[in-house]
Image 1: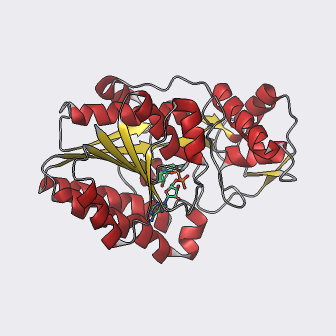
Image 2: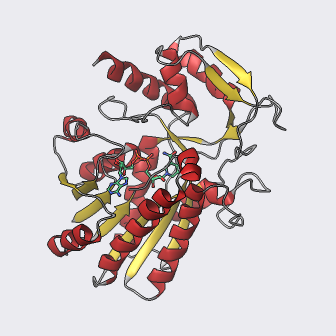
Length: 338
Ligand SMILES: NC(=O)c1ccc[n+]([C@@H]2O[C@H](COP(=O)([O-])OP(=O)(O)OC[C@H]3O[C@@H](n4cnc5c(N)ncnc54)[C@H](O)[C@@H]3O)[C@@H](O)[C@H]2O)c1
């Protein structure tokens, strides 16, 4: 069965390609390599013994998207990861984000709308909840006004898919990720942040390896036990596996609605200081960090209620925070040796 993975050479996409291939799916990966490298294909090969079919393509090019789906009109499912994801950059350059995250999505859906039966999985984010009132966050918590153009593209993307599914054969699952971290345990693939990382864990590993002098902890005056912000860190391999489970639900027609939404997290919140302590323990490295002021746009806490994913999807994250951090550290050490 042929599955198209857009952004298939990126961080979450590449781990999902591995899990799909392990389950016997034929994968066609699309990527424009704007935030990834063709070397990722070697990593996937080293893990699975197989490379996906790779189409280097920019999804903002409507004609290319049309040609692609003419060639691959036998596709059973599309997992759409391709997007730009830097919150700060989206504030500086909103049109890039609306073009890449919305126009590209529309072009893909236009082609899928013409097919008789197709399944679609969308990378959404817990950013749609903003600072939710109640923890842990359930899927029916209200979507709040987006705090950045990036966050807005996830909300608009979810709405577009919901509208389109009503009038086409498309069945869809919207997956709201909490904070994906870590790498494949083989360290063959992992996260490759461009420039200065925006996320905590790549910043931690780059500081530990000596690439960054110091880690800044943004704020220790949040209303949390130790004053630092709380997030739900999920191992990327667990996250990738959830995509395969969601895809099978659609392929087997077990979905209860044309569009379903699931939180993907561990259900456990960890503070920045807890993550630092856990990292120091698993890596044996002392981290150089300093507390600085809060970062604009950061919320106090977000962690998932995972009951729906557990009971309806039958999926649960398996890895601990320590295991996730150990894999991120192994990956950081490996890429700096090359
Ligand atoms: N990583 C996170 O913290 C996180 C959290 C929530 C949601 N998400 C969403 O998950 C998805 C995947 O995130 P990721 O962390 O793997 O990001 P990533 O940047 O590693 O992967 C995205 C891939 O898409 C490709 N791409 C971007 N624009 C493209 C285009 N126009 N045409 C073809 N390819 C294009 C990039 O080259 C990259 O390989 C994104 O939609 C992101 O918004 C990520």
